[in-house]
Length: 229
Image (cartoon, rainbow, N blue to C red):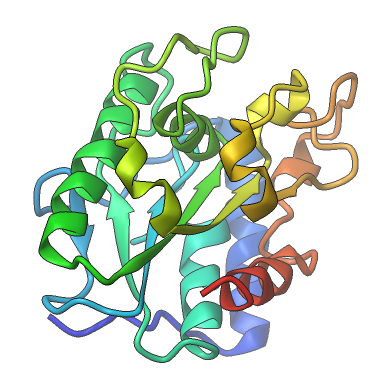
């Protein structure tokens, strides 16, 4: 299967993103697009110089996540043409098991993929609950966030040098001032929109949590990933 380059005209993309934001704000729950292929659905059968692992947010629909991942992956591919991506296959719902399943899926996918592609490097991307599960895979105790817990699985230390970059959007761990382990801190871009209550303690603007597809942070994330090959 070839890499999916999900694109839409700019005006239509904005309308879709605004519609998604409104629906999420009102209902708080939308069905996620089902993905196949075990722990994650890889977007290319061959190894690449850079492989993105993208964890969508709670109830976020779309192949990689309508607000963040579906916009970020094409932006990265414009800068790193051979980049591939995998969408983490986990429930992304409000059930207590969801972040644990996501944590395990990230570790399983990277453990398998890294053995198949020994020269590949990785960019880990997480939005909202997706950021929570990426943190857990790096060894962060997510207790204190919604349905948080100690990690159920942690990436093997041998993989640490191959994690080129980590990009968060609306990261719940930022909201409780809990960073990634020191070994990864020079490779992290932690985007938190002003007023986003998920990542900014004491904030109350839920629309800020839905703004990442429109506020310039997608471009920032793509630049950061491309600069850390």
